[in-house]
Length: 213
Image (cartoon, rainbow, N blue to C red; front, side, top):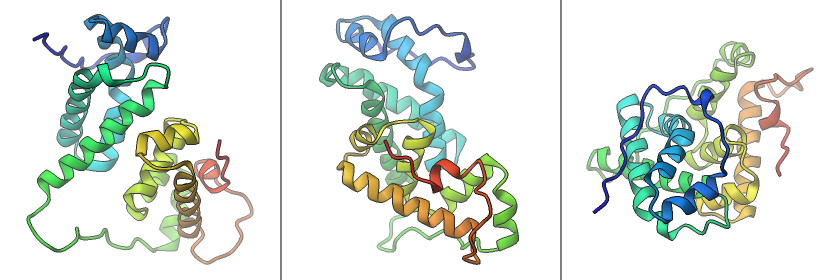
């Protein structure tokens, strides 16, 4: 059996020249090229890791999910329809691996997972509007998992609605509803008094103003 190529670490992804499309590299991988798959790993490793880290919130777990995602992708690459975009297919695998990781570490109990404490200090919320990273932390704290995944894929990965739907295994209508609800929830958290803010912060503007494609 052909060995699975190991993931690279500490690689400066900015030096990569994308001379071939993801789908062309996927076709080459299907034909048996390990070098082509290594290029796909190089392009997507940090992005998958960032996605996993938002879910697991633990670097060790996120690295394990990232490794498992690419192992599974390599094993299943023959099933990929290369006429469709590669990224949604890969993130669908990453999402399933995040779910598997959560379920494997969840305490054996009939009770639902303990929810994060409500973070409702208006001064703190308004202060965070100016910082993009803190806005995403706020989103992760308050939004349900499916809503957070939808806005992450839509705005961080810059996927169009059909691709987000593929990655999440949902209809396009369901994705639009998730995005709408997520933007409403974030807007209410960032403006808890219900007042109309004079200007939306740059970090939130694409989330709160819509812009579905």
